[in-house]
Length: 182
Image (cartoon, rainbow, N blue to C red; front, top):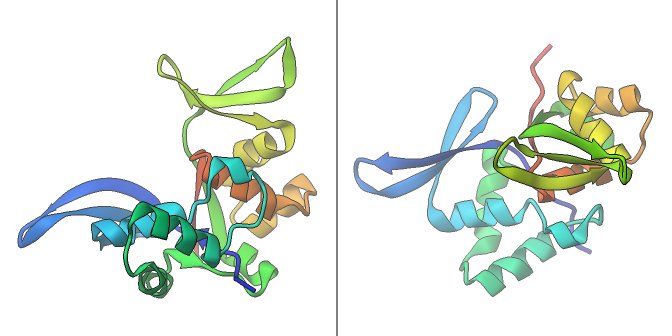
């Protein structure tokens, strides 16, 4: 059985390196991590696919997608990402939820009279990045004000927070970060 996996961190762009090819920068908390192309590709694949929706996304799924994409050594890349805190495979859902928080991407673009239960998020003038159902939109809208995913779940009274989180990550609407130390 393969373990569920979540990517952690916020992509901050491609950065020039003095002694080699450019590297991708991913921020977690106050720390920046520079990732080589294949490691970054594995991190991107850990987000899941839009088609999987709220379904579980596992290490085996990431490895399968990495093989299809021609990324060699993805198992080692996942270990490296986990060691940096950029990938999490929560054995304890409560501990995971208490140790991570939600950050959002994009802005709300609203709904329409024809589809009042669907909410667009994206960039004004550039278009819609994703259309969210009511439950996912509530997590997207309110989850980032909660100090942790656990608090967001209590705020929204939603035991399905991790499934909704998976949907937001796969659609690029949100990212995970570490919760601030209390």
